[in-house]
Length: 555
Image (cartoon, rainbow, N blue to C red; front, side, top):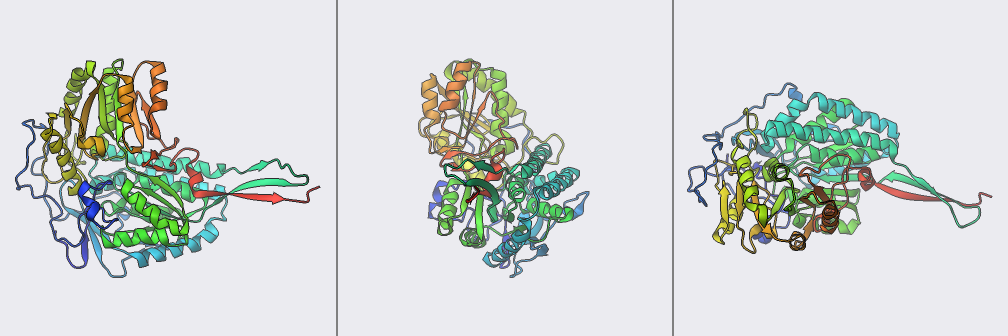
C-alpha cells in the first residue's frame, strides 16, 4: 500500500485544512504528495486517551488491507477510467491513483492520475459540444435529464454501494444521498423549461426591450468527497439544463460515483463532450487541474464546494478571465436550544444535524448552545442516543455511522478533543480514536473560552455543547465567526423564532429542525462561506446570463 513512482494513493483531506497547513502549497489540501506512508493509521501505535468512556459499538479487527472487488448488480457502473469527449481515457502518463475502502483499508480500484493536459482536452471537448448542446430545445434537455433520473433510480442500490465503499457512509445513509442526488436531476429537468426571459417597457418611443436567458458556456465543476453523488448532480444538473457543457473534477477520495454518473449519462444519450470527468490524485496534479479550469479562458463558469481557504485561491486564479463563480465554502454552524424548546425534538435534531455523515458535512452543527437551565437534561438525552450508535462498515447490518474519510480528518477530530480537554472541557461520551479511520462519536461539554470549535469546523463526529443564559448572549456568540453557512435553533416562542432567524448571520436557518437540505430550496452562505446558490428556482441562474435585445424603429 505504499506509493510507487507511477501510482498515487488517494489521501483524502478535510474541506478545511488544519492550522499547520498554511506552510503548504496553497492547493495541497492533503498529505504531501511525495511521502511514502501507509494510507491508514497503524492500529498498533499508542493511542492517546482523553477519557475513560468507551463506545459499546465500535468495530474491532475491521482494518484488513489487501484488495476488494465491489460486487454490483450492474457491474458496468464501476468505471476505472476518466471520461473525456465521449471516450474512457487513461492519463497520458499512464499514472494511476489507488482508492481505498475507508472502513477496511482494502484497495477497491484505481483511476487515472491526470493533469493539466488532459483537463485542457476535456475543456476543448466541452467547448465543441457547447456549440450544438446550447442550441437544443429546453424540452430536449428536460427529456434527457429525466432519462438520467430514471437510470439513477433503477440503479439506486448499486450507486449507494459505491458510496459506502469509497466514502464510508452507512448503506441507509448512502441510499438517502442517492435519493437526494436524483432529486436535483428531476428538479432541474423541470427548471430547464422555465428559464423565462422578460420584456421591459421602454421610455423611448418606438423601442421594445426583450431580455433573454442564455447559457454562460463551459462550466468547470469542482466537487467534494463528502457527498460523492449529490454534489455532482447539484452542479451538473442545472448546468446541463441551462445548455452549458461541463468538465467535472472528481474528488480523489471518491472518484467512482462521478464516473458512474458519466456512464449513465452516456447510456441515456448525452452527446459526447457534453459531460467530461477528469480524475487526479492529491498534490501536484490536483493543483494543475484546478489551475487549468480556473485560468483557461474557454471555461466561463466555476462552481466549487470546499474550504474557504481553497475557495479564495480558486477565486484569485479565476480573476484573470473574470469567470462567473459559485462558491459553497466552509461553515461553523451554531445549534441553539432555548429553554422553552421541545427537548426531545431538539435532541433528535442535534443527532441528525451533527452526526450525519459522521459529522463530515459543511452544515453540521459545530457549536451546540444549550440554555443553562436545561443543559443537564439535554446532555443526558444526547449522550444516551450517541451511546447507541453502531459504528462500522456501512454494509454490515445495523451500522449507523462509518469512519472518517482521511487520516488528516481523524487527526483533526482528536486534536479538537484533546485541546478542549486540556483546557478544562469534560468528555461525556466517546473521545477516543478507534481502528483505522474510525473515531468514537463524541460529546464534550463545560467548554472554556477559546476552544477549537470556536474557530473552525471540526468536520467529524464531535458534538461540542456550550451553555448560555440569554437570547442576546447566544446570538452574539453564534455570529462571532467569519463564516455564515447554516444555523439552527429550537424554540416554541413564535416571536423569538422570527427574531433569531433574522438575526443569525447565515445563509440558511433551520427552525425546530436539524435537516434543511432539499433540492427545491436555495443552498448557500454569506460572508466567508461563499456566494451563489445551488438548488431551488434560482439555482439554474448561476449557469446563465441575461442578454438584452433592444428593438428600435418599431413605430
